[in-house]
Length: 436
Image (cartoon, rainbow, N blue to C red):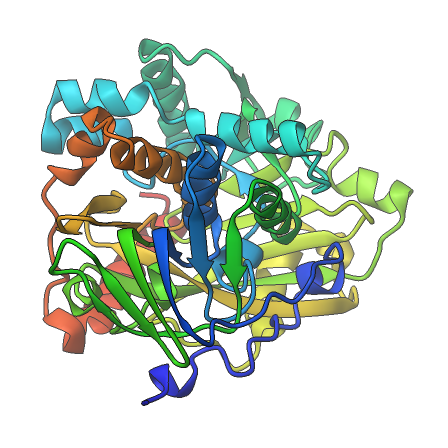
């Protein structure tokens, strides 16, 4: 049998990230090596797949999860660790494209993903260094106007958890002089993303769920009433199939390949800075992201490292030198960290949709999918996992709203989508630099 992408994940080991180095102990799950029948099969042991699986297991369903590498190997175990509410597309954008009713619907649920995360952490005792609060940082007066408009808009949708900061106010939270102002979202937060997903996997297993790691899917037949998933060494015939491969699904399901594009983002973690030095950088422990088109994001780890990320590479390739790419941005925010030792640097892919709205739908009568969080996947994936579980149990209301939203392929198709997106990114990055 052919090997999927010559094994896209190599031997399945975690990339050399800070998260992998500080991960909680987790068992190796055996690969699937036989043909089995299952009630529900989930492809992908990341946030979406495990959220759906865990919600279904809590309702008494029997779930088998297939993971090509290890639990959380993809974006779920490599991301910035920030609980940022909302979708990549703003509520204003959603209203303009899809109407006021859809915008009101989305406005009612954009904070739900964070609540799901906190619920799992509390219910299952997941140790992932969860902290509350995130901060949006503005470089210019124009960006500050955008935050003021965002606060007003979210308040109109019933969300009143935000605090605007002037230059002096943001200086109390970030030990840097580069920002014009900002806005705190008290319902945001941050955590150790790999430990979160490992805890969710353990929770699923405690309810009788089964996870097969090292099990690459090579083909899916979703046309009949009984979906069939073929892996390198086995096969699953199931009553219901959920596809959650996101940026790492590749061409296993051709119908989904043109819907999203893999995009890599980069992160690095400094050496431990010690409590005093760390407190000078982020005195109140909030995580931070600026609001430029190509943004920086950063936070403190539990052992007082600064985790700093940013930048994109369309098509999902890794830059030759992550540290060289990110260090100038780090030193722009924190000149006092010039020359600081970087202990870890890594890259990972997220799935970008052309509309910047996540996609959810059905391919066959009993095959469901969700993907395309466009860089806002920590909360969105948990929410969409819950909505998938609702649909499978017959509650189609929320699923149908997202499933009916139109999706658009990238201009230029697969051959030119990277170049098109890079050109658009360059244009918006130039606007950021010029402050227009």
